[in-house]
Image (cartoon, rainbow, N blue to C red; front, side):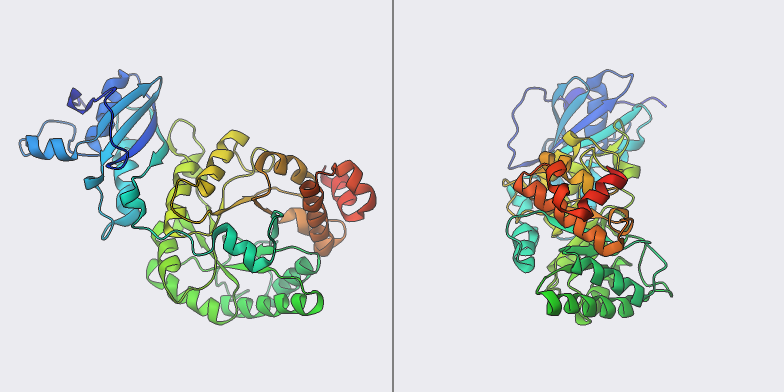
Length: 414
């Protein structure tokens, strides 16, 4: 099919006001001339289509058309006027329809990847950001400086509420600060949500009563949009200490609905299940860095960002550091989001991880806790010991000599 794209969308080298435009960077794979390919994206996502139309007058074009402002190699920068966006009715769904919409299906492009986006302050002010973020979570857990250290209950499905609570209790007695539901656990018959919330709250209370140690557990409240606040409120009423949302499957608006509802007074842990279908292909899709920004805008308090090349999840240190940066970038007018490293983590990996990430990180292990030779409590102790050693800058080989749980974890996995 032939396509007609006008070079009127090309503004190469022309400055644009970052306070008046949403500025996107796209990596493009195409046999077309890059100018034509970039113009095609700017056209399709703003005022045009595959052919000229009689209804597009000069005034509409000048006010609303996307502008290709730079082409560097295979990366094009396109600026969309702030007026192209609707935040009162529309919000993040409408934003994504512009910056990451039909462009991915254009026949003339073999691949397009949205690598980054920057929003003007006028748009950012329309979002409230996290209620808690890094400072709020650290305050709640009385953990001012060390990395947060947590677990994902394993097996991810199958345990009844009592068995689930036993796992949390053992984790807390081992010193973990955080735990969470896995992304597939909801309200199945073998572990109903309400019974699970009550059992976990009791387990966390027992840990605090017996040791003084504080921990929180993220209950998965992912559900249909019209029910998510209701489910979150019920979990909170029954004693939940944190809520979890699968942001890609539920939508960014689900996070925003919870975060901005005044009745919800808990941190929101944001899981990114299914993101790999969109972020993994380096020539097509959307980068996780891009997704990290609306999560922060919408009010997520903690977000999975990858394992920085050391865990089981696909990703490089450079890529995941970019995701982490989006969570904590001081240029955004919000509290910083707690970056979460989760997926194939175990105690022996914490030393190289913390060298990459620094200490503002939440480190989670599922199998790396439950698979420890001494069971869940032994795995939790090993994780805590590993974090302590990394925080103090003590080599694991030295620290493990006097900490048997860490020594056994390294022997098994390291």
